[in-house]
Image (tube, rainbow over all chains, first blue to last red; front, side, top):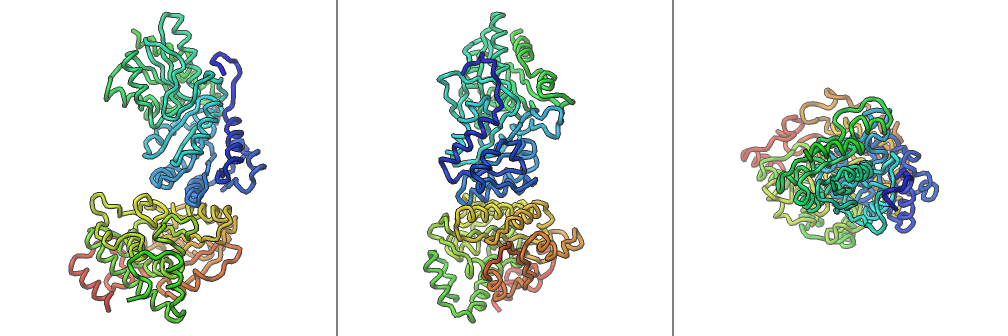
Length: 313
Length: 293
């Protein structure tokens, strides 16, 4: 895999393949969904494991409660549901039945961020980082490419605690270089540099790499961290970046209030205050396709370069 | 002294043997005595804590006594025994009655009841499964226990296991829409290993259920969702026992247990203010005297 490849991937394909592979190896793994068999790419799973797909219909509160009950009964449920309905409609179930009860339920938020584009803000899942990272016991993951999606699923199957992860629909290039491992809880440094740090997650990681390339042409050496674990945050990597570069830009396809940028700011403000720019979604999106909306909010390489230049003065 | 409430852990086999040794005709009296003891523990526990929901604790006391001492297969020596029956108290605010039952059944020491709601106690105002053995779910917000119980019942079926799931809900709690999502799913799946007990005391925190948001015709609603429905006196131990142990059909089972909030203490019965009022020392003495009679 290389950051320069032109090929782009829908992470749901990796999700579907990996979940079926995990289910083949472990009979405890079951999928739980809300009529989302097709949109979650669970058609293959349903065919191979018809008894182990629990489709509760369009009822997200029940879906999450049922998943907690399956965990109680000795199974490892992977809940697969469009991110907005999973995290907003069933938030109290996620809080009480999963996080507080500390059940090993893996919540897979499909088509997160603004990947439903012109379907509008009702269908955007941009608050999930803020809501889910506020919950004790909850690991929050935003895999940036198919490799990380597979690695996150394997890790989630083997832990014994609640997990939420985004499963990207908006196509992204592979960003994880050969030889890099995805270690949950650790940032992946994709590019070295000591002039400024760009900390990005999910769909914005490839934009961060492009921005670093553009900045290099202007004599600025930008460090790029792929922060696929939103919570618990890799505080050591954040503080190293603050100490060694003195400036941080964060970029995420999520609301700026409470997401990755806020998490980074919470760390630096306590230990090593440095100037920051936080790029994210600032208001309910207008109508448009995902790419248009990302550009609208400056969530692209040019937006990151602009923010970096403001910080460089 | 009843032969089951030993205040010490008995494994499932030993308990089943003790239970089986009681002649069927004496069973209701034994369960009644256990429920009386449970109510005494609730009064003492709440009085010491200064908080609690005594009205609902008393309406559900006979249901919990019958389940814990007459029906459920449990192992206090191994609370996470995979083959245990699941009891989920969805009306988590009645934690004092659950804790009392768990103490009497040997899951937690009886002395622990004195710590209810005290700083850093494992016995929170609502149950926490991570801190209290025998608790299956961290309930409190209403409408959570039933969906979770559906998941338990699906798990048992997937595993080909014969353990049963019992969910105890309040009646006001049935206003929450999540319950009807769960009812639909369980009816659709024919979860015959699932029993929901509705503690039908007809009072919620602030008023009567029928004056607030009408539940009736409640039995018809459950039948329409594909359930077998039993309407019984929720303070009749023989009826509770017989209903819980009736062989399953192809449907999930709803037991609408007609109860009286505050049951067992005259000045609390059917009084809305005793939802979460705490008795003063004089009222505690009076309540204990009535329960002793």
